[in-house]
Length: 405
Ligand SMILES: Cc1cc2nc3c(=O)[nH]c(=O)nc-3n(C[C@H](O)[C@H](O)[C@H](O)COP(=O)(O)O)c2cc1C
Image 1 (tube, rainbow, N blue to C red):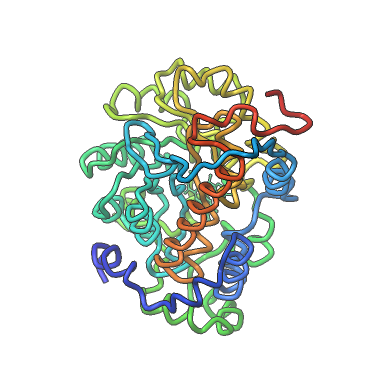
Image 2 (image 1 turned 90 degrees about the vertical axis):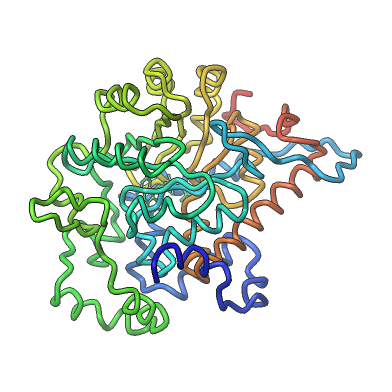
């Protein structure tokens, strides 16, 4: 199937709607992903760096923040539409850039982007997709392109030029990945940077994937898509790198540096977003450089373990730069109530990484559709239970120890 076919067909999928209807929250989708995927692939999506302290903190921060409802009001239809970087969105949600999604399901991130477009939200396409950025851009609906440096200035610059030609609305520079985080589970599973995609590996991993025949069949039919086609320029022979090789062969920073961001600001005429902000100092630097938005993000706890939960870092950052640029947030969101909490503490919108990825694992693009529906329903219901008419009506609806608002 070509990507365009994937995009148009994937949402018509053959999934049993009753089965999907029985999955009603993040935990259900995570379990479904665990059942569908070989362990190495599930852990690649689910896991975090080192002792997974930050991964846990992300969830704990959302759990610790309490709502302060204003009861006795009836809000028939809370208004949740918004505009992010000039893009009208039906709710304050974007699907986050996630590499390796074609390992999860043949629909891959084309399926995520197609479900996002159908739901009226924006998708952020990753450099480390199993599809080219041009193929992803064929999916209708607003998209931003997330750029990694991948080893050379030349490749980074060519990616930015290609993204402009392909019509991406904005550029997202992820700055928290100078090197790849140490993902302990990946190492234990032999799914790390040292993985070499060769016959020996296939033989070694065969018994583990054999217990997931449905996944295996899909992966074989999809042509064993291990490579990252956007990186073709990185090798002299013009062959693309595979996912583990990207970090193995890269001697330079995988993330763009501030110097690279200055180049991007001068070259890229659309919105520029800096992803991976955790401190006021970095937020101010992004603002001073002329960024249009930042994403307060710790990469879902996959990079530097021990950094704070994004929700904890958000209020100070929003107070410092919120009037000058759009503040987005990701890491650890598990539904509409969490979206509400992030917005109440100053985010304009949120990005979701794992939740749509679990949806993809469970049922391809229709699974992502179901996830986005659940998020939307959860957001509307939370606003109704809080007594909030719209997204600007969230003052004072959250409280918790350690928060400053
Ligand atoms: C499997 C996976 C792959 C990811 N790949 C990328 C990537 O290529 N570029 C990037 O900027 N962030 C990447 N991220 C981080 C996400 O964009 C996002 O910051 C994070 O997943 C948000 O946390 P959540 O998963 O708890 O929603 C990845 C995350 C996951 C789970």
